[in-house]
Structure formats: structure tokens, C-alpha cells
Image 1 (cartoon, rainbow, N blue to C red):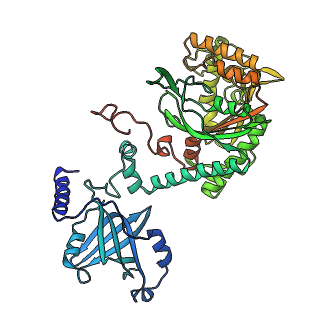
Image 2 (tube, rainbow, N blue to C red):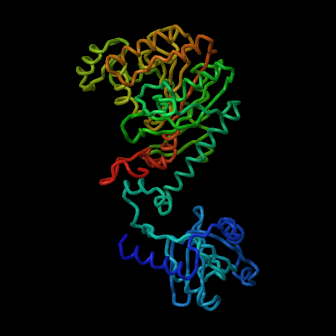
Image 3 (tube, rainbow, N blue to C red):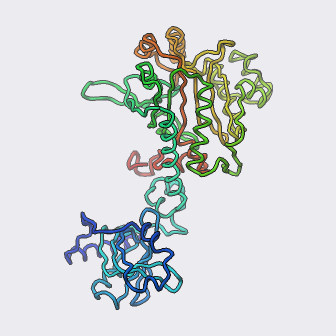
Length: 499
């Protein structure tokens, strides 16, 4: 914005104040939603409006101004719906007409008067009264060639939502997704609960935490990386079907699939295993897509996805073998697996453990192929310290991940409820931490005590809400579907502002 334009807007604000006009009043007079006005009168013919009995009062943001001498048109926007407002010098006092002419795009106003239809058929409110509700001191981006820079869009989401209809559509879709998740779980008898975001010891996922400090207790705390361990405490306490939709925090990099602050839905069901959670997640994701999109078939980044078709189940071992030719259980130690990767030209990364290398093979060579919905089952125990071992092969656990569009959207276990096995696993994680793995789980004695009191057989499921919305919205990145994604500090303002 030019300094000259900003000074002109401030000058108009000052003139209003000198005239005794409150440019930011606290009260708004009686009004009807623009959407309601359009619904009632959209189909009304011109002659039905000509009597003058059809009147309305509306409020909104001025999105366009067009002046034709003694006739002025304004476009008002409220909650995504527009209505044209006219101001005719012949119908209102001169001072009111001049006031209307002094308005700026971006101002909020209330207008009241009869409805009429222009020669082009546009439903229009002919203002007999116009009140300023809030003065805008900065112009909005131009609709067609203004706010297109991706970084600017994410740093100024309020403007993005105003001028980019697609951004608004994604925000509405996200709300429908969350609402439908709740409705599905509520209908199945799950209880929505809340667990601590600030935790004395984090756990439930392989991730680095954010740390903070509570001054009153002189206590270091962590932002949770997962809701899991607290939700399982509730199952042990007799709340046998629970879920939470909330924010988790992981001190990791940013990518199209990762944001350090993200939304998860986690649910836990007593007397269930990972097979039950497969049925739950398949039914849930179908329900969500139907409610949010009105269809089980949609496109994601140029690829058609069909949730109505049968969802196949494949073991992680078979998926990696098909993609790379490697049998991970044949090469069940780090160096032999790394050597086998090199022999096949796979260029393995610097994974510190066998499990981490298996995870890399899965991420790099299998996930991108998983466009249609699919469950990948039976992960190595080293990757899943909170999941129950498979009875027929204790090297593996009863765990699955669900994939859509080449992205993991769900993760589930038959939850480990043997306190002795859980202690051994957490002790092994502690050794990994001592060896330099800062994503390894800490030893949580309080949680082990919960297991010693008894946890029934339990199935748990986590769904990445942001990732699910990204797929359903056909968005290339999480930053498109998180209203305020984490951003690198803008140049010259390190650490300042919402970005």
C-alpha cells in the first residue's frame, strides 16, 4: 500500500471524527443476514419488488465501489455471500450520499432500504440509511491479481479468506470434517474427553517435544506429542470408549506433510484389537468423505480415489518387498539391510537403527505408491514400543497404518497392556535415547503403574485431521488447510507476529 493512499484513508477517518461520527461503534442496529435476504428474494420478479414492500437491513464489508455520478453501487460481503447496495442521490439527503461516496473498499457498513432489481437482473438494496460500522485503513488486495504469493497468503490469512474463494472453501470443508468425525464417534458410543496439553513427561509417539517451564511450581513441562497415554489411563479407569480431537506438538521440520503444531483425532476402545480398528477407520473415513464432499469418489492431485471400493490389506514386509525386492525380515539387522539396499542401488540414508532404516524404505519407496485407500499391517516391534506383539511372530506387532493419496492418514495398534513387556520396551527405548536417538520414548513409571493396575484389551486409532483435510480438499500441502501454519520469521522481524 502506498503511503499516499494510507494517508488519504486516515484523513477520511479524521474528518469523520471531527464531524462527530463514531467510526467504530459498539452496537449494530437490526439487520438480516445477507444469505437470508437472497434466499427470500432471489427469485422475486422485478414487479413484485416494485411496490416497495420488500425491505431489508443488512451489514457487511464493502468489497467493491462503482460511481456513476448521482448513482453509487457497493458490493457488501457477509459470511461469503454478497449483495449489491445502491445509493441514489435523488432518494437520500445530499450529506448521506456524500458519506456513501467517501466510503472505502474494506469498510464495514450497515445499509437499510427497499429491494429492487437492476436491468441486468441483479437483486439490489436501495439504501435509505447507511451507517459506518468499522473504518478500514488499509486496502484489500485486488481480486484477480492481488493476493497470489503463497507466503503472503499464509502470513495474511484474513486477506486470503476474503479474496480467494478456494481458501474459504477449504476452511468450511475442514469444519465439516471435524464435525463429521465427532458425529461418527458419538454415534458409536464414544465419549469425547480432554487430556493435558502441558505434560510433566511426554510420550505416545517417537518425536522430539517442545519444552516450557511453569514458574509457580518451578517445573519443566512438555507440550504433548500425542494424547495416547492419557487416553489409555481413562480406559483403565473404566471409560471404555473415549476420543479426543486436539492439538499435538512435535519439534520437527516443516514439509508438505508436517507442521510442528497439528490436529489429531485419537480414539480408544476397550475389548477391541487392531482388526476392529480397521473396520472403525474404514467406516469412519467413508462417513467423513460422504458428509464433507457428498461422495466417496474424488480426485487428489490429478489421481482419482475411490473409498467405496474394497480397501486391501498388505503387510509392511510384503509392501517393502514388492517395492524394493528386499525382505526386511531376512535382513533383520542394520548393516546387512544397509548393504542389501546399496546392492540394489537404493542409497539408504543415515538411519541409526534397523527399524529407522525400515521406516525410511517404507516412506521413500512404498508410501508414494499408495494412492487408493489401503491398510499396511504388522510393523516391526522396534518401530512400535506401545503395540502388542503378534502371537505368531514376536518380531512384529499388531499395528496398521492407513494410506490415502500416498499419505499416511491413520495409525492404529492393538495396545500393549502387559506391564512387564511394556517396561522392557521402554527400557530399550531409554538405551536408544542414551545412544543419541532424541525421538525415543522416555521411561514413564506413572504409565507403567497404570498398566500394573490393569488395562483391558484395547484398540487405539489416531487420524491426522490436517492430512485428511488435505486429501479431501485436493490441497498440495498442509499449509493450505491449516488456517495459521507455522512460518519462518519474516525478514527483519524474527519471531514476531502470528507467522
